[in-house]
Image (cartoon, rainbow, N blue to C red):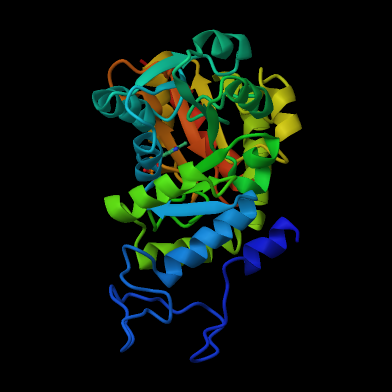
Length: 381
Ligand code: PLP
């Protein structure tokens, strides 16, 4: 089945009691046991399993083409569970540029549990090969990366991981399975912040891991999910599954709008650099064009005039909302370095745009007026 059809039908069941087409929300934390002590309907306690969570897991696994999926309370909880499934002493090769919250999770939390990390330029396979050690168990990929939109060649990194007897797991939050399917490119697993495009409405937080095989690692991860308890709630599962139904159409419009905005910014005199893998000038464009169907909804750009100019542009927008995150219908703008905090490698004049589902001409007009106003503000004093 094609992705559009899977997105609509995967994980769906007509409610046997009522015939409801939309799934009921199962808030019950506990389920009835039969007189003989068995659980004839398969459910015991919601931390263990819940119909809404199961439906979502089934749907994301189908879209990614995986054999096993587990949903967690957030994307970060999903990533943490993967780290917890590694044995102490394991070494992880991770990108130098990745979502800053995960960089902190790796550096400041996971190292205290006996894991070690090498942070490398993941866009350079030779740098990755050099970082691999006998105890390397995992190579972490985030492509496109947040917020610099760097592109990693998933097939090449997965091959390096497998030569070393390690797994390759790809954070597919930015692309979603609609634009990029890492498992078919050789990755062993995929992780999502479902808070973003999967949910798609800026109103639900969650995370999902999908693994290619139902193997020992998958069983360990499920044990961590259920016994560790950082599970996704029934309501969030319900909301995110609802979001999934329209994911292919939303991703198409996010990507088309982002391409229009990136092209506009690329020729604007107040803009120093645009980071968008859809632009032929982007250093990762060739790899992105090979492994992605479209290039996604995030665009980062650097404003001429430094940090102050970037803040002025963000301060002048009327339609874009100044807020963090991405994946919702509304367009957002964010000065990333000040959110990421001291020590970040994100340039001080960089603004990240989460391009939404508005008409692209309205987005371009808003950015145009904000850039003009900011530039004239700078010239005025
Ligand atoms: N991965 C990426 C690429 C992200 O951008 C984020 C959050 O922004 C996460 C993971 C973490 O997800 P969550 O905020 O749902 O914990």
